[in-house]
Length: 112
Length: 112
Image 1 (cartoon, chains in turn yellow, blue):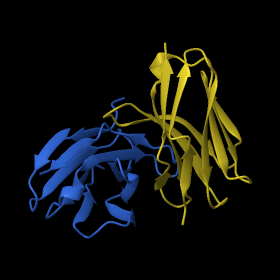
Image 2: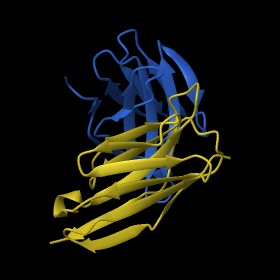
Image 3: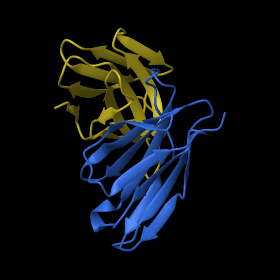
Image 4: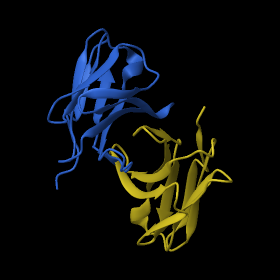
């Protein structure tokens, strides 16, 4: 069974701090890993997609890495801001399908 | 380019009724997937469509069904609603084989 785990479930940090969100998955035959952001009551916003042949992707203050051998992905957020407060979800994809398997998410609060 | 749109945004139904939710993908996207999000179970895959054909189905009862039209718009139907069907239903679209999913704002279904 393909499972995705995100720890911690919640994280509170002061503004300006650099932080790392963790995502682990079973089955190293992962095809891709996608990070999303979800604001309360809203849909998901795609942040970064890492294909299985890649090790990391960067967008602005965000950097995501993928280590298939250890079954881990991390999302690094630099110089956090209150506007970064949201739930961050990681999801693994599988070849031959658009299906994503999601973790339960990490709820991030950045305090001014 | 317009994003994924879902209608209606909010819906209140009574147990035993049926409901139809609609999703219009991003222009040019022919793959559409549906997910159910609840506080307890998180995001769970319902089904995936491409070119009017269901390619993959999640572990949900037969009361949940869907279809896709020739213009790539998709609908999902839930018959004989139960209280446990109360959830945020999210639709995502993508170019097939790009694996980057774009989500709509969701339909919040409340069953009373």
